[in-house]
Length: 510
Image 1 (cartoon, rainbow, N blue to C red):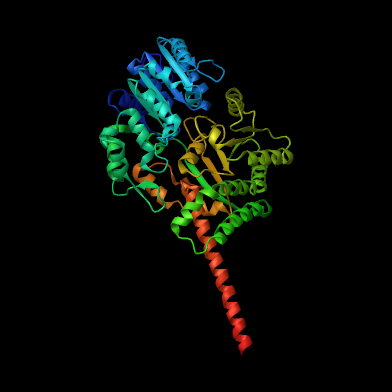
Image 2 (cartoon, rainbow, N blue to C red):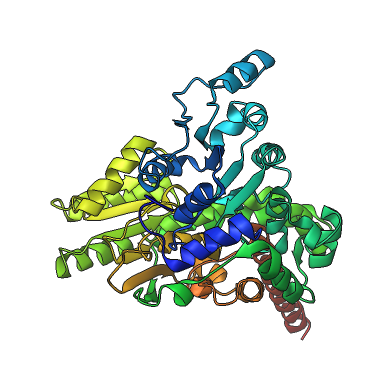
C-alpha cells in the first residue's frame, strides 16, 4: 500500500482484504465509513489492470478526485477516463460500439455514470473491455431485476473478473433487494440454485400480492451473508469517537388551505368510483382501484410539503437568529416546496446565503456549491434527498431539518449521514417536521414491520429514523388504507341517514 493516501483505518484495510482475498465482495458498511477508499484499496491490492467504476452521476467527480488522490496520480496503473454527457463515447449500434471500445484504454480506470449506460448503449463496449475489477457504487440502485439499468449492469458484470458492490443500504425493504447484487457478485449459489428458489425461500406473497420477507428464514439469510458475502460494520462498532445523532420530531400545524384541494380531489375520485359500484367493494376490488389513485397520493405528499413551508421558514430563521454562525442543511423532496421555502427564507433573512441542490443542478455547479458550503460561504443549503442524499460530505453542518422525508428509512439515513460521517466533530441534530392530521402522521405510524425486517438482516444498523420520520411504506398500502376508511365513513353516514329517515317515519305514524 506504498504511497496510498490517506492511510486507511484498520477496519477499512480489513474490508479491502476481505473483498480482495476472502470473496466478501459486497462492502455494506453504514454510510460515512469510507467505502470509496476501501474499493480503491481493493484495486491496489489486486493490481487490477482494468478497473471500471459505475456510479450515480452525482458521484463521478468525487470518484475521479479520490482515485487521483489515493493513488497519488502516478500509481493509477494506466489512464484515467471519465465518461460524461459531453463525452461522445456511445454504443448504440455496431459501428459506434466498436468505436467506443477503441476509445477505452488498454490499461487504466474508467468512470461512468450509470445514467449513460442505457442512454448511450454502453453496456456492450464496457463488457467487451473485460475489466479486471468492476466497482458498483450505490449498488442498491440496481435492486430491480427487470429494470433496463439493472440488466445493463448485470451484462457488464458477467464479463468482469471480479465485481465489487458498495452500498450502505443493501436492503431497502425486503430480501428481494439483494437478489441482483448476489447475482452480480457471483454469490447466489450460497443461498439457492436459481433466482426463483431464492425468492420462494426468503419471501412470500402477502394479501396485497407483494413479496415480503419470510420471517422464518431471516436469521439464516443474515448468517449466510455474514459468512460468505458481505463486510458490514456500523459506526458504533468502528468509529467509537464519532459524535452521536440526536433525532427529534417537531410537530407543526399545516396550512390547511394548501391541503384542502388535494384532499378534496382524492375524496372525489374515491367517491365517484364507489358510486359506480352496485355493492360494497371487497379487498380485491380496492387493490385493483389503487393504481388509478396513485397520482393523487403524489399530489397529497407535495401538498403536505407545501403546507409546512411557513413552519419550516420560522424554524430556520429562529435558528439562524439564535446561532448565526451555525450552517443548516434543509432536506426536501419536491421542487415546488424548495422554491417556496427559498423564496420565503430570502424574504425573511435577506442577508443569509441560501443555495439549492436538486436534480436540475449540474455536476460542476453542485461540486462548487458543496465546496463553498464546506468553506463557510453558504449559511443554508436546501437539498433534495434524491439528488444530494448520497456521496456528498457536508460535515461543516451539524444540524439538519427534514421538511420532507422519503418513504424508505434507509434513504433518510443516507441523507442524515451527509453530516454524520468521518471528520464530523460536533453532535449531530436531526429534526423532522411532521404536520398533524396529514399524510405525515399516517406514514409515521405504519413502519414497525419494515423496521423488524431490517433489524433482523442488519442488526445494530441505524434504521430507527423510520419510527420518527417516514419509511418503506408503499403508496399503495397507504392508499388502500385511505380507501377503506372512506368506505367506512360513507357506510356510517348512510347508516345514520337511514336511521334518521326511519325515525322520522315512526314519528309521523305516531
